[in-house]
Every structure is written in C-alpha cells, then in structure tokens.
Length: 545
Image (cartoon, rainbow, N blue to C red; front, side, top):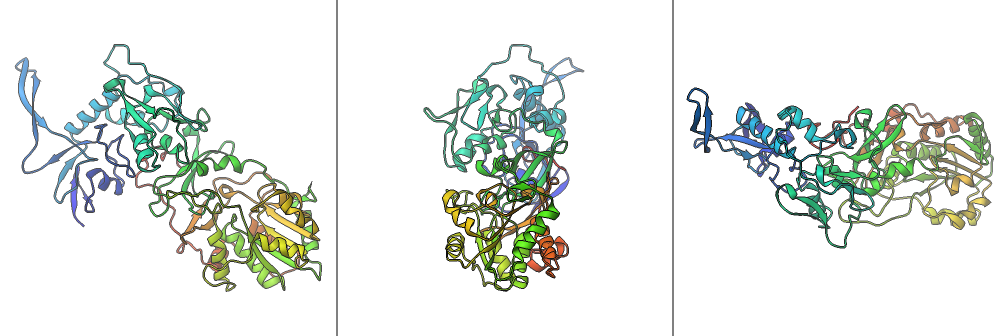
C-alpha cells in the first residue's frame, strides 16, 4: 500500500484518499470543523491547513517585522493547503504540527471566536465542543477584538426536535450537507455573507423527517441542539456503552450514554459501523430509550398481583406442568438470540409435543437510508436459532401470530409460554388468550398480553443486559449491558432455566458463554464492537467508559 509522511509518521492510504481521511483511518486527528467522513468536502473552515513539502515548494510573499532593523521586511511563508481537500500521494511530506500549521490553526480559531458568545456555562455542547478543545490545543489566548460582537437570532425552533442558536454557528455547513446528501431533503441553507452568515430553513418549511437529530449530531459546536437532550445533562457526568439499536431489523450500532449516579439513560447516538449504518441513526432509534422507560414490568406478577420470583416461577411451573395440555412456546423477534435459543431448547427437548410460534412488533414505514419496515431487531435471529438447533433450514420461520390465534380458538393450544409480551396487534384481537388454561409471559413491559397472563415475569430491556441480535442481512452483532436493571428483573434465559428447574426438567443451561457456543454466536461469529478510529474525530465520542 502506498504511504506518505505526516509529521514524520508513515501513513498508508488508498487510491482517492485525501490526507485527512488517510490520517483518520490511522486514528490521527488533523484539526477540523467542516470535514466529516460521511459527507462531501466543503473546505470552508480552514482549520485543517497543513504544509505539504515537495520538490517545488509553494511559497507566498509577505512582509514581516524585523526587530533588528526595526521595520517590516520582505519575506515568504509556506502556502498551506486544506488537508480535507488535498489528495494523498506517494512520497508526500506533510506537516500538521509545525510552526506554520500551528500559527494557521491559532489564527483560524481566533477568527471563529471573534463573534462567538462564549456562553459555555449554559451551552449543551460544553464538554464535547471542538471550539473548546481546539482553543486549548491551538490557541489558548483571549480575544483581541474589543468591539461589540455581531448578534444573531437565538433559540430558533427549526422543528419538533432541533433548536438553532445562530451566534454559536461557525458555518461549517455540515447540517446543510447532511440534509442534502444523506436525508435527501435539502431544507437547510445559508444566507448572508461573512460574519452575517446564518443557517435558515426553506420558506414555509420546518426541519422534519426521520433524520433531523443527525443535524445536531454532526454539529461540531453548540449551534444546533436537540430538544430532547437540551439542558438535560452535562456530558462529563455521563458514561457510555457500546450497543445495538433494537428499533428495526437494520440494527444500527449505537452508544448508550447514561448517568452512572442514577442509572438513567440520557441519550442514544450513532456509533460508526460502515457495514451497517455508517455514521448515522434515525430519530426513531435515537429516541427509543424514552419508550423503554414506559410501562415497565419491574416485579413478577401472579394474576396482576405483585409476587416474589420464587412464588411466580413456582406458580408458572405448576400451571405449565399440568398433563394433557396443548402446550406452546412463543419465540420473540424482540428478544436476543440467547433468550430464544434457551426457549427453543426447552420446547424441543423437554416439552413433548410443544408447538412453536413467533411474534413481535408490527411492521412500520421504511426508507432507502436506514429504516427497515421490520420493526424487530432479531427476526433473522429466530431463523438462525432454529437452524442451529436443527429445527429449520435456512431462513424458515415457525408459524406467526395469526396462526397462534387460530390454534387457540380451535383448542389446539391451551397452555402458552410466551417469550416477550409484544404482539403485532393489541386490544380485542387478544381476547382469545383469555381462553387459555395457562398463560405465562416473560416481558420487560406491561402489555395487553401480560395483563391477561396468569404469571408475568420481568426481563431487561436491551441496555440492561448482554445479548446478540441477527440483523436482516445476517450480520450478528453483540450489545453490552450499560448498567444493572432496576426492580426484580433478570435475563429471560435465566428465567427459563429456573422455570425448567422448577418443573424438574433437566435443562442444562450453564453460562451465557455456553449458550453462545450452542447457538453459534460466539465472539468469533459476531461483528466486533469497535469505536471510530479516534475518540475526537466525531462529536460526542469522548464520552466513554
């Protein structure tokens, strides 16, 4: 692979790489504002200016003060080039940290701060703002301009999700380019010139659609703020865990940012994964944590009355162990591979004649960016589990919700163990479940199914457990527990193992690692959990565990 030198270090590059992109792949940051690896090149912030030495040096004539002669004299200085635009070439010698580059970075930083309100104490971007970081690294001096700064609109509501502060804006145009190039809705633009610039909406429009929160995510300063996260938390109090979005079958890689003092999730944001979601997430996925806090089932219930785990599992075992029942097990496309694997083993090996079904959330709207119509993160995981257990070939699935209702109405199913409480439909369509002699539901939420259950057992949501999803393309992805679940909650696979033990069934589950070996989702089988090449390359990524 060809290489060039950056501050003395050999940097490999691919054909078509710019200097900044090649450095980015190696985890080396050349200071920048407007450049983003997922967007087109703007080269307007000039923060990434570097000196490129060649056989024919590019020099600019200048005048410089000479202390000995006490006058300005003719001189030259290197003509710097933006690293985001300059192409990498074999044998180039590039300097991003020499005297000329550092002087340019300090001057650019000073210019960007001339009219900035410097309202860091009340700005949501404080703690992950590049203006702050680069001021410390490439300037660290006070303003020399004593004039009144230019004042611009503040607190402009762009839509339901985004608020704009024009005084903080450095006109990097990332938000404009994102809406144009990725979201395919060019609703944002720039008006005026020089220090009168500001971002505006198209006449009669507001910022809407499925990707509005990405404009806040790509903003390197505090100009665009999320209505959801605004004034909610300081990022230096947050910790982050690598996870996978359970909002649809795409399975975007994400960071779960939470406050360890309260074990409360503060926000979700995308984690770079070029194989799945690149650098982006949809609004629905980024706000999913709010829905995960609602209608939680936090204690076991027997006929809607709170109970202990021991009593609830004993009651469930007694009901499911009645002879002569038409017993069935429902797999869940909302639950992970590990939970479904144990449920399949229980049904296949220890409940003779048990029928197997699957269910999950109903389909939703799709697009050609990220959103999948399948609003379940692990439908492909059910097919994988059944295939690995020998119960199905390829992508075959067991009967679904409609067939389950038909079999309940026909009396072929009289006892049901449901993994997950989500169903495609709610309301009157669940009335046949009242006919069941036994209904045991394992779910993180109170749903129409848990309200009809004889026994309801609580399990965690995705950021409270370790697990594996299989996405629609067959990619297996691991997600990690951010913090322990609240209430009397335990992983569904452990509940199933305890339930089997209470029924005197010899279901040997072992550890989570044992389950993953059986289900063929060991660390060698799944995509590795990884961050962007550099912790400072994308906004917010310095919030880490």
